[in-house]
Image (tube, rainbow, N blue to C red):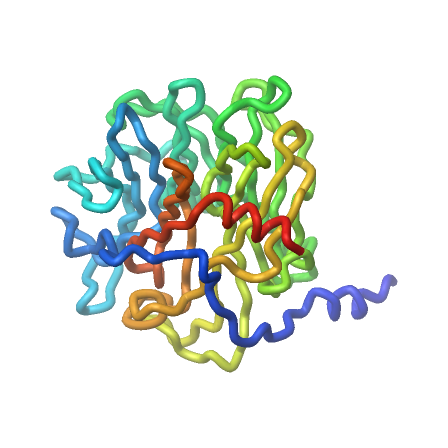
Length: 340
């Protein structure tokens, strides 16, 4: 029988230690820009939004875990819809999105991302089922009706679409998580796949491994949909490290993980080529709304990035509890990717 002890030792996480955000990043003074208090229906936690711009208006679809924030109880999850004229102040629609179960063994849908491709709006999402977690792609014209184009096999999550075709194919980043293949350890990487029609996906390749990110020790994955720049596809991703010494950090008895945001640059013509990865995190949980009084503290989870006038707006969930905004000059982000 093969001895897996050496392989398992390679996968076992080692503590990362202290980290700090890059100085080029500016958190918005209005943070958090959306909380459960802004929701006109049952809400306890509001986080992980997809954001896009349609006809000069910002559109947000966010994850809403409803229940009681004060009593620290959760009853379920749905998706909320909000609009904004400036990307900072949001008007939330009076009811959750009508996004019904799409499979017989549906449990819940969450963590939406938004993309506009050739003028059409697409929403990717995660869906929990009794048989595993699946990643989905839907399209909509008005956020009232949706057509489901694709559901992955379990277990896959965090898929984000490139905003245009590459060599005639749609492209996406994703984070499959094969527990059995990792000897029962939580260590997951970022992959890239291609499709002729958004329904059938293949030619899947490993894009970035945990071992390529010094500030991660258990998993990495897509965050915001890639942003096209003159120098390449700019990708804001999430990275996770675990440290057993952290103990209780939120509602649960133990929460030993820390989620940070990273940045990398991919080749425009061939996004399977990584041109550079910043070896330090872009955003680290540091502010009060990121490290305390949350469902899961020490969490920065980027899910949307919009490039406007040379500035990147990065929307992220903080402490799995509220929605925040940070900005940075795109030239600074590219420099971070290419400097090392």
